[in-house]
Length: 198
Image (tube, rainbow, N blue to C red; front, top):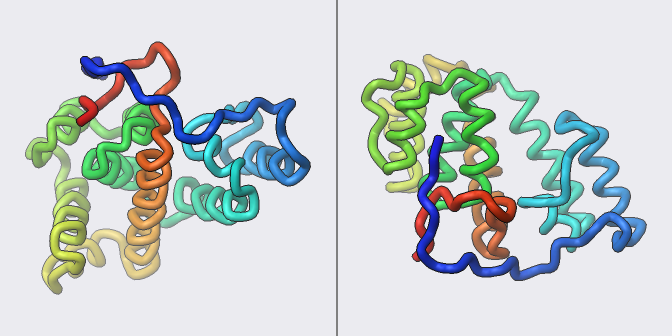
C-alpha cells in the first residue's frame, strides 16, 4: 500500500542503532534470543529491537511477550494483525504500521480495510469479526473501559482465553507504539512514512 512521504525531514532516532559488532555480551544474548524465537534467524536490528538492545534485560522480557502475542495466542492471525494495525493507526506509530501492513495482508486483511484504517475511518466493508474487534478497540481506547455489550460480542467471537489474549496483544502493541514514538524509530531509510509527522 503506497504511503505518503512527509514534507519534513525525518527526525533521527533518539538512541543510536547499534551494529552487531558493537554489542556487549548481554545485548548479543538478547539478539540471539530474538533470532532463535518465532521471528527467525534473519531478524534485523531495527524498530523496537534496536531500542530493546539498549536495555537488554527489559528487552528480553518484552520480546518474549511479543513473540507470544504475535505467534502463540488463540486470536486468529488475521484478527491479531488487524488489531495491531488499529493500534498502530491510533498511535500513528510509523514503524509499527510499516512492519505490520505486509503481515496483515498475508494474514488475509483486505486492502480496502487497510486503506480505511490508514485514513482513520471505520472499515465498513471489513468482515463482521474485524468490525467487532474494531469496535472493542475503539471503545477501550476512548473510554478506558468496554461495555457489557461490546465485551460479550468479542467473548462470543473469541472465547474466554483468546479475549484475555486480545487485550494482551493490544497492551503489548501500545507498549511497542510508545517505544517507537518516544525513541523516533521510523521505517528504514528510503521507505516512505505512513503518516505525516506533526
